[in-house]
Image (cartoon, rainbow, N blue to C red; front, side):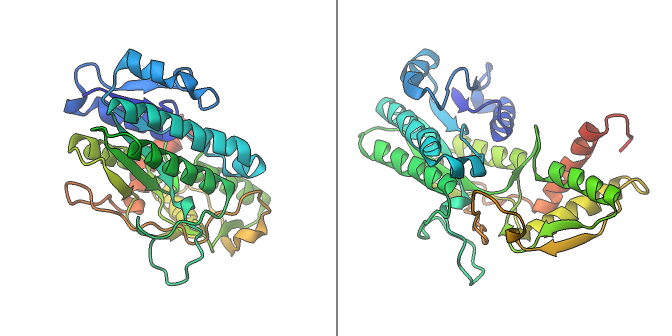
Length: 311
């Protein structure tokens, strides 16, 4: 089975490509890694020719503009990249009868609920910011494209939240850097205590996406996150505790102070309750807890931050 991955150089795209390389159904040549030079969200018109050239049977659409504050400052550009470009890709896939897996976000929900129930796929969407609105526009455009064509291809929408993993500056990396600065200044590390979600490891999400493809279970809306709920403060403290456990005597010794998200002025307004209810995978197994995922990820992150240290 030929599987193409857009945004193959990004955080999730890299993980999906790696997971597909280990999947027997991907064949001897492995996945098609479509980076920005192949599929550019700012110039998506050539995607039909790209599909005809490489002839995938499934496309996993990881490419997106995920700078939520940038999206808030330029909603039109956000909609062009996350909405219109996605709709164009979906239309070209639908016309050819290809399966499409579209990556979406918990930010299609407003996060205003107070009953502490996680959002289900059939709950009413109401994006609280331009990023969420642009991703929901992409969902709707893809649904319209597949509904408009009587084809064999299936559309899967995978919503997730709070991704972490290599490469680049993710939340755990930012927390370690901020903790070092706070410790050096003799100040507590201020952490947001009123924003909730499910931290999700890109490697775990990628394996789940590969399972959906391999089991021919792409169709539908899927909520895929690591198990458990955390505030940003909970997540930050877990990162610091685990880092200290990995390197006794050399961890970052800093106190934390819970603060509201309003402490920092931002262009975007993320959902305060951004928790998704995981949907069943074909195997019947859910993803492991976010704490266990952090434990697997952290040694590699610490090595990247301090290559000479024996973590």
